[in-house]
Image (tube, rainbow, N blue to C red; front, side, top):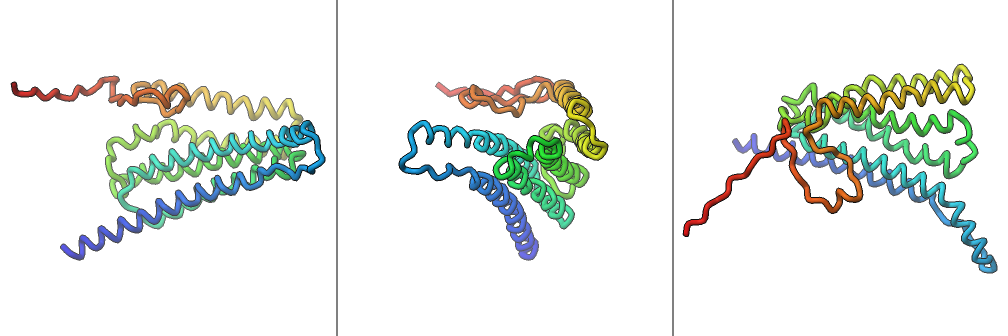
Length: 257
């Protein structure tokens, strides 16, 4: 019994290390992204209008950082939700998690196109690089989720809730579509399509992909609370939505007179 308890404690400690390492990588990535957003040196004798002009030139970088922060933040929230079901780990899980973290770590590289070489963003391949890194992160996260779904009896708790809570039908759809969109981007560059044709070839499937994903959400998960966070939702009381739209009434204790 003592040996069993020691093994359980060791397993729990190792699992915490895996989670803490992942969180640390996310924190470092977000920190690195903001380091290149710096206000240039402004001479003392510069006028207020010149200083303001310098600040306004920084707005594209701040916007790019805000968009990337939002994307990385959403990935972290999904990662947190996925790992909330974890009770054990193995080498395959660690490897897939590292692949996912690698794809997320490419965000600062994508932002360097905008920060240090903004003129590159006028080319298709410059824009596509950022989009591909975004989709690659989503694809590798779906790989991670798919592996856990496949081995949920061994690695996870609350296995009967996993597929619903993690929206597996939507993620599985993304798993097959995202590589197709990435391949289409590569084709427009390799075959040197003009800008108008490239927009039809790439943005068309992206639009259909997002519409189809929303339809799948409404069909299979319409009775569950959406994960979207809005400004008003920050001040709204949290309500639990149960399957088939039914709410569970908690028994009221009668106080003896």
